[in-house]
Structures are given as C-alpha cells and as structure tokens.
Amino acid sequence: MRSYLILGMCALYLIQYFAELHWLQYVVVVLSLLAFLGSALKADRFPRWLGIVMMTAGVMIEWSKGTGAEGISDGIFLILPLLSLITLAPLLSIPLRLGGYFESIAILLRNLLHQPKKLYAGITGTLFLLSPILSLGSVRIINEFLEELKLPSEVSAKSYLVGFSTAVLWSPYFASVSLVLHYMNVSFKEYIMYGIGLSILSLLIGNILFAIWVKHHPVKEELSAKVPLLNAHRNQLLKLVFFVVLLMGSCLLIESLSHWSMIVIVCLVSIVVPLLFGILLADKKQIIPPLVDFRDRTVPMMNNEIMLFMSAGMLAFAMKGTSVANGISLFLSVLVHQSFLLFALAVMVIVLCITYIGIHQIAAVGALAMQLNPAELGMSNIGLAMLLLLTWSISTALSPFSGLNLMVSRFAGISGFQVGLRSNGLHLTLVALIGIAIISFIG
Image (cartoon, rainbow, N blue to C red):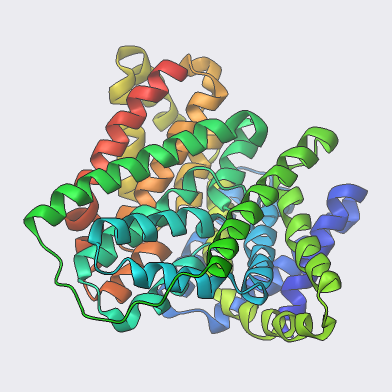
C-alpha cells in the first residue's frame, strides 16, 4: 500500500508540474504527508526521530512566520521534486542488471586484485560511472563483487568514499546537484563541465594519494585465479560507458529543447528508459520481475530517505528569512568582502557542524542556497553553486550520519570517524583547498 502511495505522489507531482493546477498541489502535499507518516512507522529509530524533530521544527517555524498552512504546503511541495527523484532514479538499475554489465565489472575488478593501484583506480572509476545512476546501490554492488576477497579496511574506505563522492558534484540524478542548481537558477548545461572537472580533480587526487599510501602500507595479495577478460566483457564495459554518456546527453538535449526542470527531466528519463529497454528485449517478460521487485522491495525500503529528505527540506524552507538565517547571511556577506578563502571555509564549517550532528545536507545547504544572494556576495551563480556542491560532497564523506559514511563504515568494519577523517581526511582537505582556489577564479 505504501508503495502505491509513494509512487502515486511522484506521478501526481509530475502531472502537476505540467498541468499547474493549484488544487492538485494540495492533493500532492496531502499524499506526501501520508507517505511521511507511513514511512515514520517503518523507518530506523534514528532517522525516524530526527525526521520528526526536523519536520516539527520546520512546521513550527513556518507557522510562527505567519504563513500558516499555505507556507507549510509550499515548503513540503518544494521538496517533492527531490523525493520523486530519489524514488524513481533506481529504475535505471534495471537495464544495467538485465544487460549483463555487472558481470563484466566484477571480472575486471577481480583481475586487478594483484595490482593495488590499478584496483583502486578500477573501483573509483567504476563508481564514478555507476554512482550517478545507481546512487548508494553502486557501492553495495561493488562491495558484493569484492566481499570474498577481503580487502583491507583502509582500501575499502578510501576507494568507496572517493569514488562515490565524485557523483555528488555532477550527477543530475543526485539530490545535491538538482537542489543546488534549482535554487541557484543555473541550468545543468551551464554547470556540467565545471562539475565533471571537480569530480575528475577529486579522482586524480585520490589516486595519487593512494599510490603514495600503498608504498608505505603494502597490500597483502590474496591468491586467486584470474578470469580472462574476454572481448565480450570489454564490449560490455564500453557499452556501459556509452549508456552513461547517452543518459547524460539525453538530459542535456531535453533541457535545451524544452527548458523543463532538470529534476523533472531526470524523473521522466528514469521511467522511459527501462520501459524502452523492456520493449526492445527479445523476451519482454524479463522486464516484469524487476519492475515488481522495484514496487514491492525498493520503494518500501525508502523509509529513511523519505523521513530525512522531506523533514530536512521543510526545515530548510522554514529557516529562510528567520533572524538566525539572516544573521548567518550577514556574517558571510561581511566575510566574503574580507577574504574569499575565509568565506568559503566558513560555509564549509557551518555545513559540517550541522551535518556532523545528524542533520541532513538538504537542510544545511538548502537553507544557505535559499538565503544567500550571489550578486550581494560578488559571486556568479555558478561559482556559489560549485562551492555549495563541493561543501555537500565533503560533508557527505565526513559526516558519520550520512548514508555513504554509514554504509562504507559497515562494509569496511571501522567507525564512521575513521572512514571520514582518518582514511580520507587528507584527500578531502586537498580537494577542498584546490576546489576553493578554482572557484575563486571562476566565481
């Protein structure tokens, strides 16, 4: 029942986007609240209580501003695009599973086991390709391929975190990029080259630091038989690259022709691509089990995400225009005219402090994105968007409460603090400083 409620919410939001019916907005908001309450019953303990606290605080703050039910409705409706995005994007994993791409990736990584630097490059490069589409599912899949090989904790922590965090900087299928670009009024077409540039920079720094690290910490090689990487597997890997490029190119083309919101475009692509893949399959019945699995297993498992995203989005919306938000905005406005480096570091520290106590990046970065005016800061919209996304990526890696950090710490068998600061602190520091320097020239 909850699956139909959540999927109905997404479908009605997409209809409302094109129909622009005011009464339909209220219907979608009511469905969203029902989905929120339903998810609260099934969510894990921490996300449940954190979500309830953030939602309650957001509603109370919005009510105290005098906007009443209308303001609360607007706050919830504002986060619906992201809820639709995180709900529908997993559909894109269906063509990858049915296409046999994962087997080829597994064979490639197993053949690199005896060459730690190439293995690290293979893991981070694969996550660079898969994460924009599969989100955290990509880390889970890679870990399944390598689980029996028993990689050292440090190798897992470094490779998973570095590979995944690059997607936060550039993928339109991620809430980070969609949210920030939406609030900064920047098209994905304008931003993509900057985002990919930052992502590649992060990959390069990660691989260089790992090459230095592995010299002083040799990785014990496990003896295992190599499986030949046949031409068929190489072709599958090339097809995977082509698939990702085609997806991103399609989003860019549709945005250029239609001027629709990138979030809506991504949602529509997430629906259309698996359906087209199913139509083109020789045995069309193959597409039915994955779709049923998506409805019955994937969607109901999104309780934590719905709790955190909706409540954090409501809190971020409510914070706009409050004395606290205005005070932070004034402080940052003064600081940016003194030193861009201090301003950028202050933004990062503020977000890190908020996310380190468990509050989602949507609340912290979203509030800043809605509150800060690039023109008043003497920055371009793209420059501020890059800074906020760089901050989001770093806080995702460092915060022990982020989904990425929690998953990697579980796979690596070490604490979230060790995964973030000890294993990747130097990498994240260098990415932050070099990224800030680049942004200062651009923005």
